[in-house]
Amino acid sequence: MEARIQNALISVFDKTGLDAIIHQLSKLGVKIYSTGGTADFIQSIGAEVHQVEALTGYPSILDGRVKTLHPKVFGGILARREEGHLTQLATYDIPTLDLVIVDLYPFEKTVASTTDEATIIEKIDIGGISLIRAAAKNYQDVVIVPSQAQYDYLLPLLKSQAGSTTLDQRRALAAAAFEVTSHYDSAIYNYFAGLGGETKALKISQSPRQELRYGENPHQSAEFYGNLDEIFDFLGGKELSYNNLVDVDAAVALMAEFQNEKPSFAIIKHTNACGVATRDTNLEAWNAALAADPVSAFGGIFITNTEVDEKTAAEVDKLFYEILIAPSYTQGALDLLMEKKKRILLKLKQYPVAKHSIKTLLNGVIRQEQDQYRHKAEEWKTVTKKGADAATLADLYFANKCVKHLKSNTIVLIKNGQMIGMGCGQTSRVDACHQAIDKARRFGFDVAGSVMASDAFFPFPDCVEIAHNAGINAVVQPGGSIKDQLSIDYCDANDMVMMVTGVRHFRH
Image (cartoon, rainbow, N blue to C red; front, top):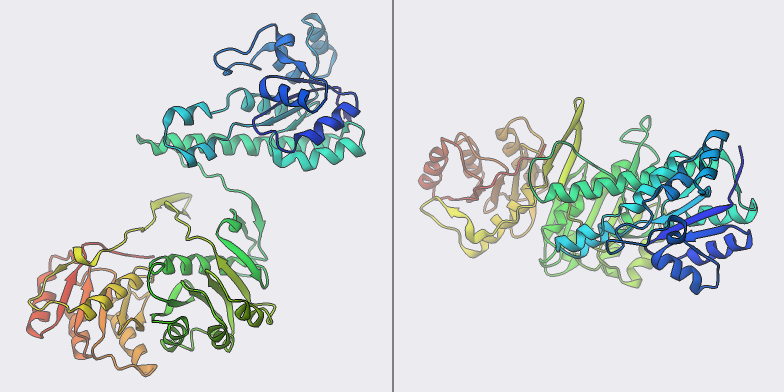
């Protein structure tokens, strides 16, 4: 069912891109109603505009809070184009409004730019959101354009269809309208929820939607909702997959711990780090990270906190990888790396800071604060008679950063700013400890003199005993077991260092 636009109501905050639509509507002979700054803009570009105030008989009042909220406006939008409703419109001299164009007050941008509550509250749009909902409800007869994002859809229709639209087109715009209103309302709810008090619902609204090749496995469909362009410049390679995105998230979260450190490299496989190292140069950091587990590194995700130069790129390029992430690349490095078209190159523009993590579970959703705790080694407690020297403390600090990003139960071994072994995802902390030591030895490392970190406390002294027998001389753990003293006593009896952080880092 086609409907022709005869009268339009336009009320927008941001006028960008509106001029082309106004000129096209004028060319089609559409009567334009508007108010306030939008009406002034329409006049300024030489188009005829009719003031809403003249239609309603009321001026804009309450500092502009009430402009379009009137039966002569909403009657013209909500009336069905059938005899009963049209007769009532004629009785009250109300024109049909066949096109409504709205661009809402920028509530989210305001929240992001200020903490002043009065300023934020004034950017809660009332009239605009009501216009959108009314027009979308009556999509059988009315065209709703709820934001600038739909201008590129509307303008070709106006040009090619001479001001007429089909029911399918109006229905598609109505769907876009309710997407806009639901997102807007979610943003307002989440703002108020963030001010404190009990919340009874979880509101999530993310866009845009990006369809992925498939999910965790080829028989699963998947989508990503969000704007990756805010985080990365995509420099080359194939499209990111579901598994790529999960691994990239883990890689970026780990490297955020090292963003202000010396050149560091990490190698991620199935969200776990299999190699991490810090050195004086990027190339040295790469070589040290790779040495920790060159087998697992094959097909992994590589990330660094420092610019990749041509020498480092040449070494990285010798190994097959899925994704390389860096804050910058020299031109020589880019020229070399981009020769292999399927390998993904990402330039990291910022480390994203998500306040919460969300996961579907059973018949609902669980949400928690992200583990953003940043340790300060000077706040740790030495619980043994022997304290850590500067070099040992640096390695313990490094180890604790790594252990935070591995799946529980986990143990990490660090020696001279290099991960030399790790055990993760084990059902027993003892198994994780054995795995870390065995792995280090398998790749040729001397475990003696390394330090050990655990993501959770030791309920028994078995792990520190295993560590001591391997030549490990220092341990960091959160503490908190009722039997902490057993492990401390063992360390004291064997001239070991133990430090307690007071913060646990389970990761399931």
